[in-house]
Length: 251
Image 1 (cartoon, rainbow, N blue to C red):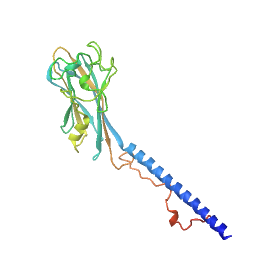
Image 2: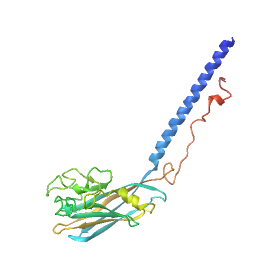
Image 3: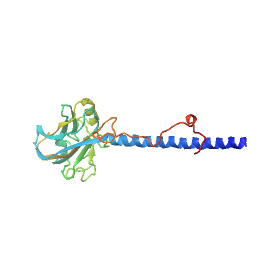
Image 4: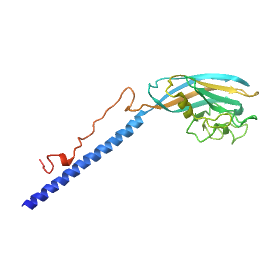
C-alpha cells in the first residue's frame, strides 16, 4: 500500500512538472511573440513630397532646389534609412547632379553626372518622369552607372528596367544616406529637406518633381505607436514545482 501511494505521489509530481514546464514554454513563446511585435511596431516611417514641377536651368551650376517637408518624427527617434523618389524629364542624363541637404545643413550627393568621372560628356540616355527613379542605400545599382546599358535614344528605368540606385559622388564613390544620418547625429530631422538639381552642360533641358521621400526611424522601448504605448501581462503566473506546496495533490 505504501509503495502504491509512493508511486502515485511520484506520478502526480511528474504531472505537475509537465504542467508547469508547459506554462514556462508558453510564457517564453508569448514573450518571443511580443518581442517580435514590439520590434515591428517600433519601425516607423515619415513621408513627404513636392509635386511642383521645377525647371532645371541648362548649363547652370546654380541649379534649382525643391523643398520636401518632413514632420512627425518624435524626439529621441533613431533614423534608420532614407529613400527619395525622383520623377525627372531630361535628355542626356549625364548632365545632371543631385544633392540632398537635411534641415540642419548636413548634405550628401545622390547623383553626379553619371558616366562622367573627372571628364567627358556623361551618359547620353534620357529620363522621363513616367519612369521615376528611387535613390536608396539598399540598391545594388550605382548611380554612376545610370544608363550605361542602353543607348542615347532610350530611357533609363523604362528601357533597362533599372529604377533604383545607391548614391555616388563625382568620383564614383558611394555616398550612402547612412553617412548623412551619422553626420546629423541627434539633430532634428523634421523640417524642410532640400533636393538640389543642376545641369552641368549645354544643349539639353528638363524638369523634375518629387513624388515621395521616406525617412525610416525607430523608437526604442515603445510598443506600437509612440502615442499609444502598450504593456502586456504573461498568460500564466510561472512558478516552480519545487516551491509549490500543492505538488502531487489533485483537487
